[in-house]
Length: 204
Image 1 (tube, rainbow, N blue to C red):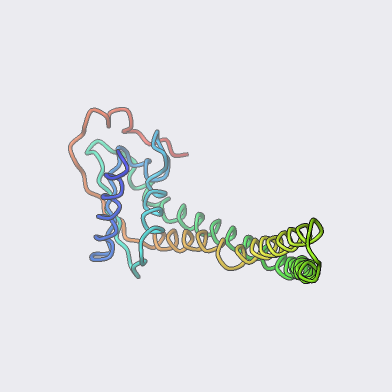
Image 2 (cartoon, rainbow, N blue to C red; image 1 turned 90 degrees about the vertical axis):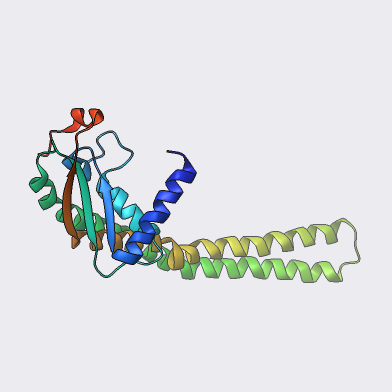
């Protein structure tokens, strides 16, 4: 699948999600909902990815699974799907909390160091302005520039973690929470040759 085709499919999925609160997923076997089975990701991860990239999440969601007529073990997979999504949501929330707390812990010390670097930069620039010229003035201006840039970099990293970096994980958590309480509907299609190798689930 090329990128334009993938983008158009994603746009279509988002449109249907917004209009009908429905996501439809075609799989070669029932256990493909929870396991990759040769795909880049499991069906549940694909659904979560669509939700994460959607402009808005619906209040309620229906997931329509399209499986080959030979698929077996559907009941076991449907029963495990909710627990799988709840576990993924919990893990994502834990990662989001860890990232935000790390940013908060580092924020004040980083701001203090950044203020020191900025003060050095300002002082060097002030002294440089009062210097007659030549090599010393150039060196002081370089020190001033380095101080200001260092202050920005030192302060920005914890600010980014505290304000922004945790949000993708939180969004993923909300997506999995929605999937955990979604309504699953299963329909069947004729068996295709590529389905033959993936008709028996191997859930423990």
